[in-house]
Length: 147
Image (cartoon, rainbow, N blue to C red; front, top):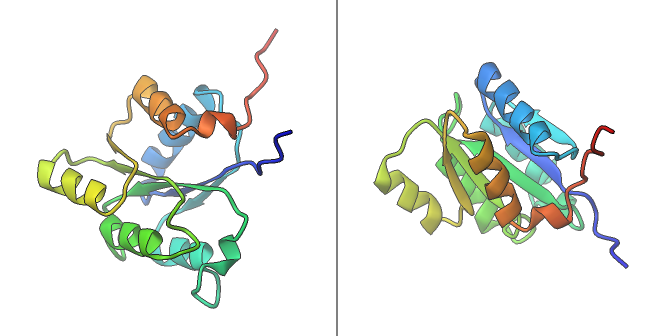
């Protein structure tokens, strides 16, 4: 019996065009999960860690974080560090989405605990595979195939 809670996708992306494209790719990959969008790190972190800042709000929550590295108020690296340093969010997979393919930055993200690093523009198949590699295809809700 699988009583796993559905995964909520947290999308932290300040570019509206990119955000729409990412959402479209998620839906095309057959994923019907709720997507909670943020355009800056401050709002995203207050959602992730709650008003008290402890992250306890996430106990029992299944999250997948899609993280742009270039945000208006802080870097995605800062967010990644905070998410992976918090006992309540550190197991949440983080997919880094960015326009840079700087090897040092990629390595730094993996060192900090990023699960997948995807360079924009997001390649649909690569994205779908990344989501599946995270094992989330067991807990993502499939959109029923049109007859």
